[in-house]
Length: 255
Image (cartoon, rainbow, N blue to C red):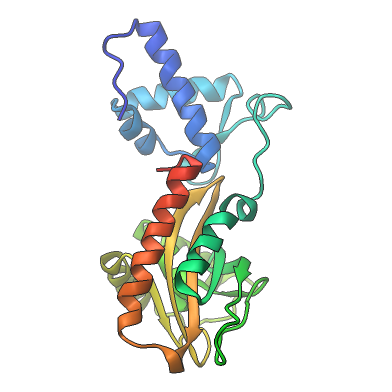
């Protein structure tokens, strides 16, 4: 929360505008409500600031009336190029792997699917879960997908599945949205997503959302053969996942 009551009005306005530009660069997009909350101002004030940035080309309005970096802000030299997501979070994925000695993945949410963009396979077990890097799976059937979907407003989840189910490429017409929402509510309470043989037979998986990093919604997951799973693994993995997510976001400046 930002307060600038001791600063001259013009300086305070410039500061707030710069904060909004920084947030748009970090998160990829920003709503008026989010801007007002971060700046601790009325939504009307946040709207005027965003409208000014838009008029000058430093922001633009994208999907769902969210504001994104505009052409002036994205000119060469204006913004420092960011390393790919997998490069930024790889050290934290490796640290998670060292803690749990099970196969771990980094996944992103695209529509109603998760994309496994990186992973480390555990090879110390005779019975182990192999890498799924490059594999795309239905989000609602995976631990990482549940963890990421659980952070979205209900209407956005409905909108994503509405688009997926109405498109020409729809694959699962029997999706039960009420069931999905119930599972997402449970995920919010648990703070981690779980998957017991939902995405594929023989897998037990656990995941935590990293939130939005460089405009991509991401998650860490741990997967193991269901045959080796014990009830004690839930608490142990949850502890390591939550710690890894917090460390990642703090180190990258998204806390």
